Length: 167
Image (tube, rainbow, N blue to C red; front, side, top):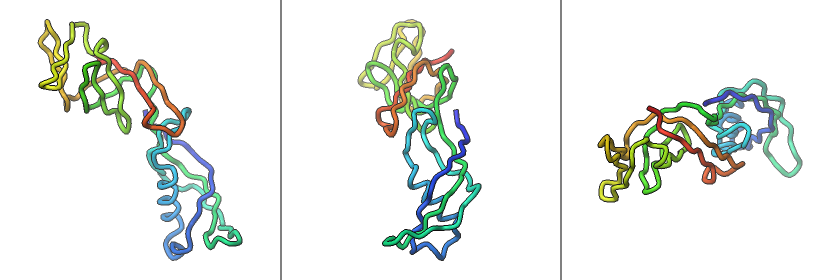
């Protein structure tokens, strides 16, 4: 699920950008600063949506940049327990399928794909259901339910979302 979050921070505007519109520079700088940031409570930072307040700049001796107090709205993505979400299968492994859900990937364990017996076909890189003859291939679009979430601060790489394919 995507959320709009209001954040208060201080933004540093370098002197080489003083001739550009402050709001534009502040948004770009904040996007660069927060890009890829993961917070256990908020989720994964997506972008700065808008600047609500941009205070007067303050100068610090020895640094030519101006520092501004800023209040801005941002968009975060955080998967929720039991949430139904559409995604694309991006990789198949012997133990399950990885599904791209928005800006994150989730794992669908083979035991969660279907009630049918599943085998992995390494030549095709696909999961095959024995009795129903259904297959799960890379590139397939699926609808899944989030059954487990493991968000770790500041590490998208260590973040995990367990899912099951819904019928």
